Image 1 (cartoon, helix red, strand yellow):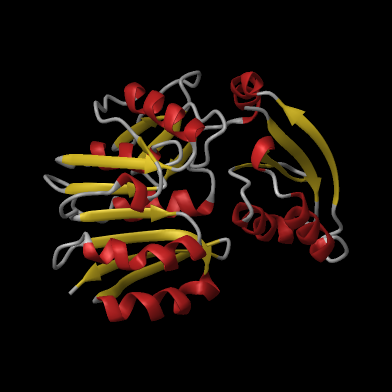
Image 2: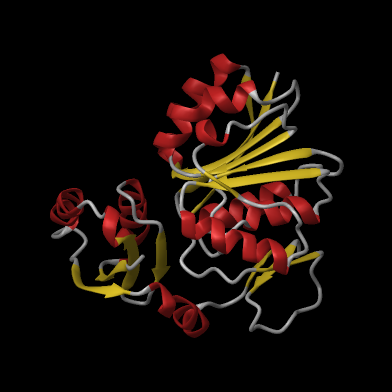
Length: 275
């Protein structure tokens, strides 16, 4: 499956806004650049009308200019090797690709070869989810990673000694890439494909990780709550700080209380616990 590639030049303060807007209409991979961002969408699922509406909305205030092209799947590894730098989440975890050298001084290391999948640790949402995971006891716990992308959060759960880790994503390419990353990090579990309703998650999960977007989180919140025990944890990200109230309006009647919230570049991350 080929991807449409959009090299977008825009004002820096609109970069994260455009990423959020484009993610809502099916774009599943982004790379921030000095000029703006590169955005990628599956060619056979591309919604041209919705895309044009977003461009028109932000064209003047964000000073948008762009170049569109088709990017075959086979080129993605090469592109990431050119542009992907390792990252550090404080002293908790060092995230690198297989072509980077290991670095000492971190509690954990994750090796991610991201290909076209979202979730490398560079984005503020993934960074904060990893940080919050480091604050939650995973040892001996059953963990569910919803919309797993590269599998980075599931891998972190494994490193934190979760007893069982399950993960899934709606994108076939993410599943393929996620399983490759699982192999690189010693996970024997396999990523499933589908939504939380389609994979039909069974049983109770002590920790649920969901780094998706506001609309999906609102739609699936009741399902998350139904799969959690009393005092179970729900870690959320993928939305702006101004969206927190909307999410908590749905979460609180389900017995989910807010323990902690963080923000980075106006992206929010929450730790919720079930009564």
